[in-house]
Length: 609
Image (cartoon, rainbow, N blue to C red; front, top):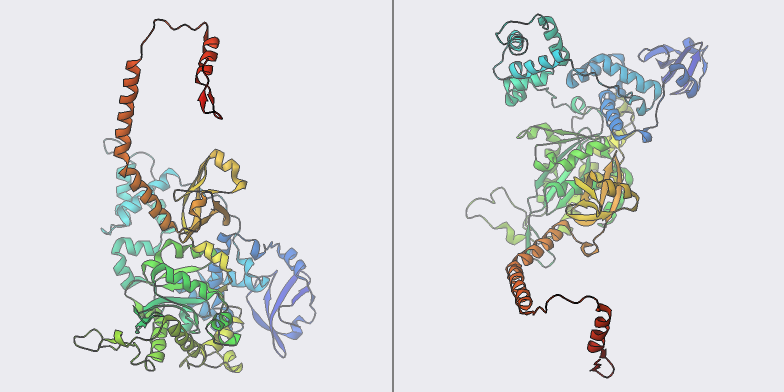
């Protein structure tokens, strides 16, 4: 018997999840039951079964993951996160039940829901089995239900904290009384009103609308705790943040530039630095730079700086499926929210709560602590740098950005591979496999586990997802985006019919834009060649200069029109009329005038008739 083998006895099909000396862990495929240990003798009469036979018996049609649309992929990853923390304890019923109870309370879902998705994944061993069924058209609310919703929003979900009974009475008064205030014969009962409320209520909406957001966060919000396995039971939860480094740097000529910005993503479970960005620009730029570094091959990346590493020292080139950020504007921008199209979940923590992402905060402390003691007198600032009369640390600066990035890289490699993680909650399996208390070792072990929640993304796919979105307009001149015209030969009908579309563009290069339709990006090239190689800001500047020049000569244009009118009227008024114009001999007259005005360009003379 082997792990993941399918066995069949009559109409009963089981899958083997684990094998021990005299027992096996099985899960029912046709007869639904959760994993349990049985002796090998109990399944001795079972024969081998194929995946096709099992799919036919269960009537399950699983679509390949690569063929799922982005909405279904996001659904799959969201629900896989519900069971990811349970998978390491699948063979221990007590721990498994405890984890299911904990996750159900944390995510506000029923334990049975988690069991259902866990069973699906274990039976089919394919994350695509969690994909949603085709959506049925939602039933429209009746007139009474719309009135109930209106009453709840107007009288119940408010800071006045009215009771359900009060909201119900106000609904009858406003919606079910005649002009004289008499109750109509037909109206919903209090029982119906309460049933509608219970069916559609959301406790978060209840607390925030009646008590306010601050009180909700202080008294009612879910408490995630500070335990690693409670918040991030497997790898795949990245915590993001930025800091200004405590050192001044210079350019290649020795001129002071300032303090660089370090942005990093740290895995909450293992503590591994998944990627970093060291730059002079903060905000969305540094965040995009970080995401690019996260999916980069770290061996090749370090080689650019003359640093040679083994792949297992920094084996991270995927995006965590969950990114935890604070309320910074760059993390709330639409560009970053678009990562959800790749299946990534963005969690924005409340402002002024750094302890909720203490892993990345500690990372900055450790990294800066590594280099500061070795770079004293070379631009490193001390805690007293803002006090009056202290040494000006800017005068000590001597390192360039390239020098400092090499130092930061060495610090990150030490942090990932040599730093000892104290009090890490090692499992029995980890100790049995001699996993060292280093971030890289824990990360590499976590990648081999079934609960690892990472998303593989190509560079071009990531860039297109992060590009700024706007609305483009089709017309006969092409696709109009940011007042520029773009073309694609395959969209002739769109140009003729017109209409609008969502477009992604790169502000640093206007040569192309990408039409977004059903998750597919289609490239359009610039129709105005004079703007090739321009940034969007350069195009705007050039057009502004052109408008300024046009405004400057507008007075002369108006004066010229007036002068032209004067000249034409003067010439016309001096013309002498000879009575009615003779139009009968027009051909003879035309030939005569042609001979009179004809020039011999060789001789330079005019032939007279």
